[in-house]
Structure formats: structure tokens, C-alpha cells
Amino acid sequence: MISKEFFKNIDAVAEERDLSRDQVIEAFTQGMIAGCKKAHDVRSCRVTIREDRNEILVYKQQLVVEEYSMEVDKAHTQILLEDAKKTNSRIKVGELLEEKIDPKEFGHFAVRDFKSRLNETLVTMQKENLYNHFKAYENEMLTARVIDVADDHYRLEIGKDLTTLLPKKESLPKDNFHVGDHVRVYVTDVEMKTKWPKVFVSRTHSSLIIRLLENLIPEIKEGIIEVMGISRDPGDRSKIGVKSNDPKVDPIGACVGEGGSRIREIVRTLSDEKIDLFRWSDNERELIANALQPADVVAVTRINPKEKNALAIVPDDQLSLAIGKLGQNVKLAVQACGWSIDIKSETMAQGEGILY
Image (tube, rainbow, N blue to C red; front, side, top):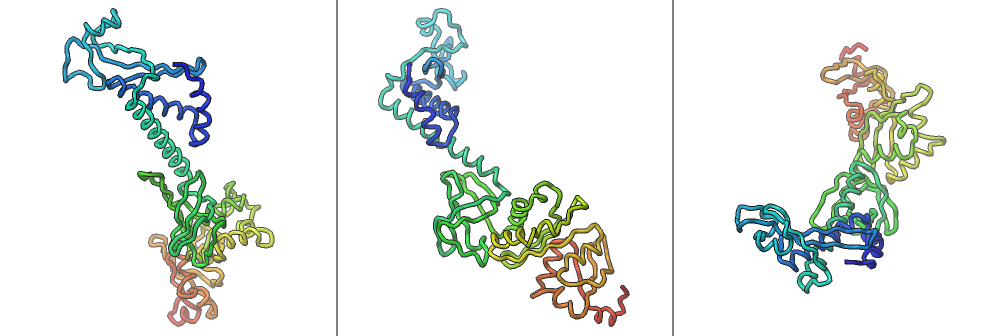
């Protein structure tokens, strides 16, 4: 069958459906096979497409048998040898008899099956493409656009004509987005659902900050600076331990940026969440003291590497700061550095006879 019109339309369909040219051809092939099966009441057909000649060749297939049997390959319709020889005198038992058919002669039901399978295959391919596209963003950050605001969620457009929900419980307390706003979110999971893929996003996930740092600080993206530990009270405060693999590069200064430009952009993106940066160290005493910043630490003692716990001694006037409001500072320090930290003031330590 010659079909110049079909070959002209391949690219248009591919663009409309966001599919490749080969995918459209494969979908058409599957549709043509379905139509052929219906039109000729067979179990298998073969389609060959020759773009260079604008040709679509369709063949119905039948398995040649000596006699009908239920045990023979059920993927093909059977035909007796004597009947097959009427079409191909050289055919043998066990071979497939192929007869060229003209799709233009498809009846109503065959055309219906052709269209149904074609559309079904195109939609399946679209779903798979969308899934694969967003699956690559899993555990990554993307920029979405707010298209609707409800009491318990924001509806976001994330690209490829796909939308998702950002539940208010996954947003930050100070987030107050409006329709049209662009927002950075972290993709926590991508699942294939019956209708379309579902993308789950969050702004409370700690890794969102890591992706922001990678995006805004070239030294982190290039591996010169590493994020070694992170803890977060989403929307309120985060504590991040960083180290430099280049002695010439100050990890804190690089993250803060000139005049605070880099860290200010991250804070703005996170709706004014405070960011505490501390210098990572392989020395336990330095690490723990740094993690408790902005409080000053006089000494770190009673270090137990096996249990990963230690005691930090701080000046009397720094005790509240070291512990933080509702214990936030020490909690974030513990989570970020991975050590359990007990804190005592100098007066408390002296009263208990603790040497340091």
C-alpha cells in the first residue's frame, strides 16, 4: 500500500504527542497488526514499512500444519498443508504462510481495532516517556509553576503538560505562593499510575538544600567543597557541615558568597529559613565544637568513638545559646555531625569535678 500522506504526518504526530518518529511508526505498526487480525480473523500479522518508497506492506500469517491440533503454537492461526499449497506450492509443514493484504479493504470493525490499538499504543508510549523523563528527576530539584492554590495544597505545573500537588504539609511554614509564582521543589518519588505518572514533591526534604547549594555554588557542584552533614527544621533553621578539598578554598566563605549573596539566595528560596554553616573536621573535638556554633565551646571531653558520644563544655553565658530554643541548636548539631552531645556550662562542670 502506497501512503505518502502517512509519512508526511509522522513528524506532526510525533511533535504533538512528544514522541520520537520511531515510536509513532511502531504505534502505527501495532495498530495495523490489530486491524489485520480483525479483518482476516487470524492470530498474527506482519507489517513492513519502507519509508524510502512510501510503502506499507501488511501480511496475514498462518501456520502450516498436517492436521489441526490444540498442541501446536497458539500464537498463529493454523492452515492445512493442502490449503496452503493453493497459495504457495512450495510451502512446508511448520512454515508460516504469509499473504499480502490491502489495509484499504479493512471493514468497519477492523478500522475500529486499528484506531483503538494505535491510540492505545501512542498513549502508553507517552506515559512511558513521561515516566522516564521525570524518573530522571527523582532525588533531584526542579522548578515548578504554581497554577492553583487550595487550602491543603498547591497545584504545580512541572513541565511536559504534567501537573502535581505540593501538599501544604510538604511546604514551608512561611511559604505563601500565588498563581504564576515559580517555586523550587525536591522530587521524592515518581510512580507509574493507571492514567499518568505521578510525581511526588517536597520543600521540607533536607536534600532540597543540598541541591540548592549545588545549583548556586560552583565549588560544590565541582566537588571542591563537600556537604558532609545536614540537619533541618524545615522553614525555621538548617545546619550544614562543609569541608574543602582545596586548602586554598574556604568552604564557609565560598558558600556564603561575596557580601552574603549566595547564602542569601538560598535563604530567599526557602522563604527565609535560617542557614547555619559550620566547618567539618576529621578531629572529633573540632567537629563537635564547630557543629554547636554559633555558641563558643571551651572544651570537648569524654569522647567515646565507639558510641559516638561526647561532652561539650561551654561558658556559662553561652549555655542557652548552645542548647538553643527548645533544644534546637544541639538537636541540629547532633543530627548534622552524627555525634550524641551532652552540654554543660563551666560552672556545672567544675561543680561535678569534670576535668577538661
